[in-house]
Length: 259
Image 1 (cartoon, rainbow, N blue to C red):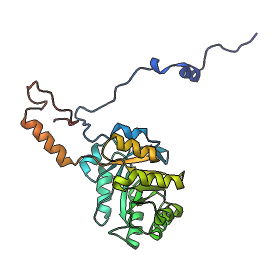
Image 2 (cartoon, rainbow, N blue to C red):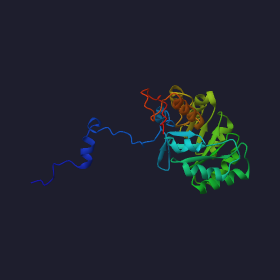
Image 3 (cartoon, one colour):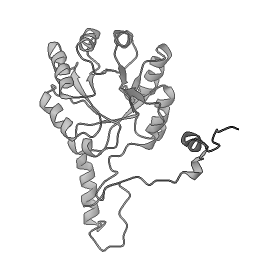
Image 4 (cartoon, helix red, strand yellow):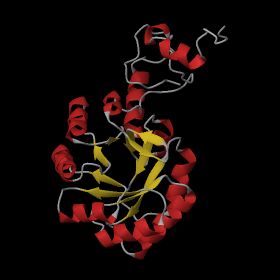
């Protein structure tokens, strides 16, 4: 007589359950949460770049502390047009709720300072460091040799310099080629089938999907400035579109929660 139980295991029961049987769970939001800094949904169609077990599809390209705090992007790309300073990295680290990738120079800032900024940023706890497009391959290689976090090399075209940065061991290539981004992504992908590519997503779903199709694994998104969001909020206030007013006029679907 067989003593084998006919009762299915927990894993078998789970695999037999169809998606239709699993209840839909509504997203959890705070009472004052806002979707004003939410990424375009199309970015989630990318394959993503997996860094230390975390898959990242979207990078919010911003240094605005308010946006950094409130965006739902998978990561933050904090690159700015001034000499890098550890105190700026520290400030962004305090408000970021997602992995922070910070610029350490390569354009305005050059030489040994770039290497030192990269080392300091790693010690502060960043998820990765970003080098601007003018950084020579020697600088890229030097930074790779001194940090254990991913090194993102920014490029604006596919040329010998880009190829050398890939071959030097850049963890991710960040394509910032404006209107030519999809073309440059496609050129890099045709020569390097496995290099992780991050690229700017442009201004709409069509541009995002085109860049993904060209071969980008993840995308950067430039969120609206906090000042623009505040201006829109004040316009809502002036026209009575506020939850604090008795007006029956619905608030515009701006994604802004009115406090």
